[in-house]
Image 1 (tube, helix red, strand yellow):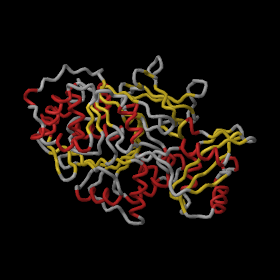
Image 2 (cartoon, rainbow, N blue to C red):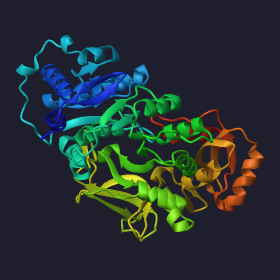
Image 3 (tube, helix red, strand yellow):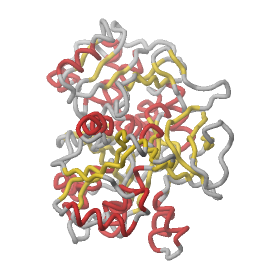
Image 4 (cartoon, rainbow, N blue to C red):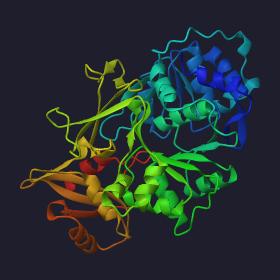
Length: 479
């Protein structure tokens, strides 16, 4: 088996539109036909590199590569020339699909080869399906290997084929080089939900598209969610068709989530936690959990808004102390995951331990009911006077201030305390007011020693904070 069975199943279930972009749609039969035509061309290359935005050509190229039995590599089209060339050099002889090549890929007249002449190689579920380069928030990008069996395990363990309504449509604004872009394609095509692509994101266009296309499901990253909420201001979203809004990819500040729940009162929210190396989501906080927590006066129940939910079927999660022992309920430690969909493979190197556990490098804790709380990356922990401090706790407090729109908390070297706490903020407010605000809500050891304002915070294109960039800058100027 390989992932090409998903468009084959979709085509056998009926010929209706399955993907839409820029006002044009492909039916399931058209998608499969174009993928087979592309595969006859792709077979002569060792890999297919995709260097474009969300486009009808994206699923054609992905499934064409799968049918041809060669790896598909979606690259970040926003990279500078030097970074892009460095990644291209890693794939000698590969076919590179650039923006100017994409239209021809979805034009049957533009492909010389006939789908009738295509002979697919014997499917191998252990072959490499996709290589996605990690975002590089803490180090240089690494090639995460996802084999067909990893992706199919995610789909088969968590979804049922053809369960969507014919009118269901899913809006995808995350880029194709993000794991969510890949797995949204697989999961929506498998369940029968039409995919609506946006080539780029801005909040007004996103809202307009939801309304115009009567989108029922959408997935965005936290930065996008914050911009949508800001665009709405005090108004309701007015998106009656939107039944489900999933968010994930990085930590969502609690104030942003609570404002979003108010603006979308009739939409079910889903927090999906996963990594590139885990072939998408491994834990989910569902709509019922969101609404119950949001409406509760019980601090323990309400605190679940800050969790990423419970493990998905087929996934095991354990939290371990620094010594490697299982952490107690509620105790913070390192998060490890295990399951069929977990890859944990970079190039030719696997980082799974002997029992198949993958170290996420996230700090977290599990409550008595198995809800997982992610408290940041282990590398981000600030150690001040011997106390381990999670930046997320301080960031959430600062973001509650109406004058602050973004916040990042880091540690810089200090000869007395080991590290000083620096808050880097985006907003228009007096620093003394922020210091007083923080002192009232945080104990002294967690109050920022220094407050720095910026016009914007350094981030990846999918909204992940580049904390290492701030650390490199501020440890030289404020250490």
